[in-house]
Length: 270
Image (cartoon, rainbow, N blue to C red; front, side, top):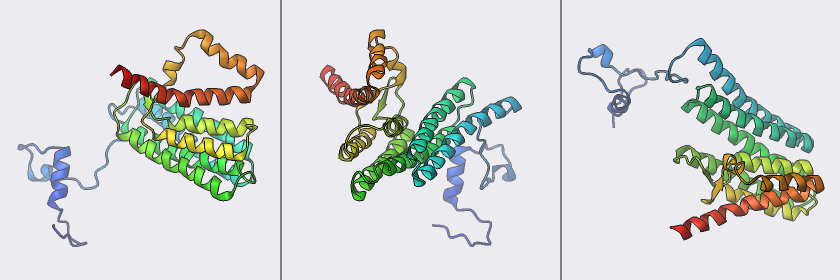
């Protein structure tokens, strides 16, 4: 291993080889051109960097930052016992999180930087803010330890789910495990509508949802769900008019159960 003195300009040969593997040096380059640039800046926006594209890129990332900021605000509101307002802010996080992806694709400014920004914002909004809001909503209904463990499971599983998503091949039809966005939406809506169930039941549901995020079960994406038969899409609407809470629980249970059922069906066909 090469030891570099703090005041020296020598560069570790391993670093040189790593940089050259990213940007190979042409034999025609002179000594000054071939020298690696340590700490060089990599463009955040690939492709043509016109003013119009930069503006679109800024709008997309503003949506990502809005989701992160709303998640942080949801934590503050939960700390002030404004649990319903915190849940509304979480729903807004979900909206902005979906919006930044849609805009990035339609405006043609999707980038690796944007993907990493989105992942970090999701961890703040859905991996931290969501369990904090749930923890605040459980105050006085279950033991502090039980609420803390369930919410810690959500945070840990969200981190694992996001890291796994970043390094896994993408499937246009199914998610591998319940996405963090959907899990946070379920938790936020459950707090917002106030399910008439015991705190112990809520804790169990939170734990199940956490484990569903890191499961390998296939869950259909929304684009596939909207292709379901029209009569099947009308049922939740009718149910919500009759009893929104029961309908919400039925939809969540059906979606969670769909993963293991699809997994069993795939194994049977193989």
